[in-house]
Image (tube, rainbow, N blue to C red; front, top):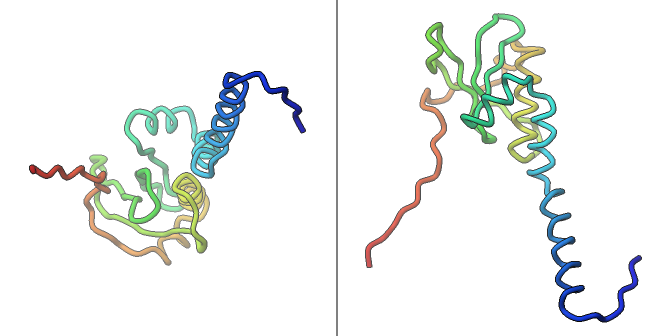
Length: 138
């Protein structure tokens, strides 16, 4: 391990900053998001960075799906005008962070769309909403 001489608050602050940086870069959600980005095509990555979702093509039907950031009810089937047509909900059996769920959804739709849709639940066609801040007047 490291041996430090007592040199004051600057050394301790530097060690804390290094540790905090290491923890932030290796948190489960950060690692999952990094892995997801590695699996996305350049176009999907640009779309995800700009809009918070990316689109994939189903392996059997060629339908387009939009995968929004999230873990449930975040997959929308698009019609010919690229508008949401049907919502789908399917997730891995164990609880995972959003990036890992989205990667599993992407791979599932691109490799075995028919099997995925056979077990998926239809959901509302509205895209997932972002939480809104409620402000109270006092």
